Length: 254
Image (cartoon, rainbow, N blue to C red; front, top):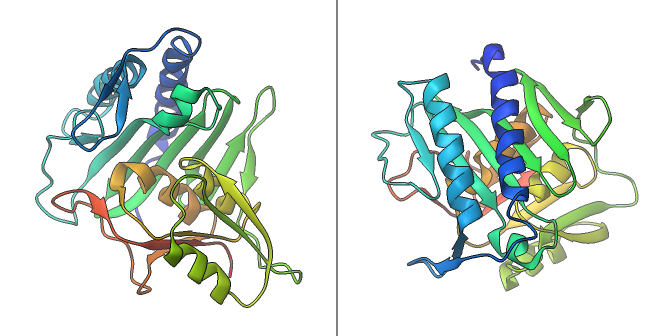
């Protein structure tokens, strides 16, 4: 797998600055528009999206950028190289001021999630890839530390699932695990980060997502030693014509 160490610092800086822009809207009245897919978008989404896209174009002028709020770029094949951007993953949580929203930027290289940065602005927590097989977490006022997935504890799996997208298939999957100690809920791509840092063991998602929702988190999970596969056990493909994902399961060292 190819890694680009020269991108680590600027990618983190772009992600952190986008979070700063978003927090500038956090306590203000929001203009909320409902998109064609029935999901909300705010002026914070647009402002952060525009900033990220502009900065990534400076960093890599020839690399396509597929962003949730400007997704008219078409990728020609699933071995392509491109950025995936979700300026606010968890816009509903942002609107509700729960703090459970993230900035996601991921690099897909040869069809593989290779680099990623995820920032939780309301908590000042950054997850990112810092090497080919190295993922790190930086919490507020603390130094970055390496994160790795964990082996399943003897007490059983800790399962993390969506707060708002639980389905019967999700519950059936959880019921089929051999031993579950705990079930926790989390919003947005925070679920992938919890598996990557060893706070959870598995994240099942039986329902639609888009590539920009999970590309950055998938890269971080891979770097931390985890894996993300379809419900058929196959590697998830990127650069799909509609950017829509099917069901998937994110695993730690299980």
